[in-house]
Image (cartoon, helix red, strand yellow):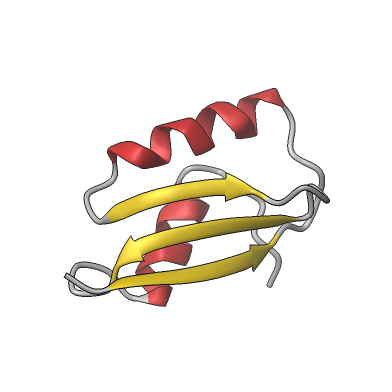
Length: 70
């Protein structure tokens, strides 16, 4: 297992529904940590690089409706 950390910029401030979706990210196999930065404009993700790549992590975030900036 190789733990990797990524930070994603968010395209907008998150609402309550977004926060519920972030809480559900822990159920995705290979994702360990999903934490919002203190500023509220970035999402910190820690994942298993032997299971997922950066593109797959971004895809999971988008599938959950998280507003990741381009």
